[in-house]
Length: 96
Image (tube, rainbow, N blue to C red; front, side, top):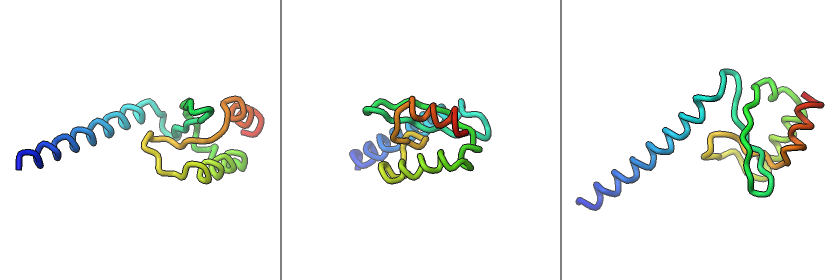
């Protein structure tokens, strides 16, 4: 019985740590924006982007590529997009 309680306690502690981490990341995201991660050579860089990007075909194309490669179940709290930082910056600067 004691081992069962200890296991439940450890699981709850891990869950609370994940939730706290997620809340801390969400706290620095302005209203009307969301976080994405650009993944290049297993290095992830976090960007905060406005919701208005969801209306642009170039960004929707990136989201479709992300779905094909990673799916949409992310524990990090933001979408991961498979492209280089330079490519993403070019799309943002030129298209959006």
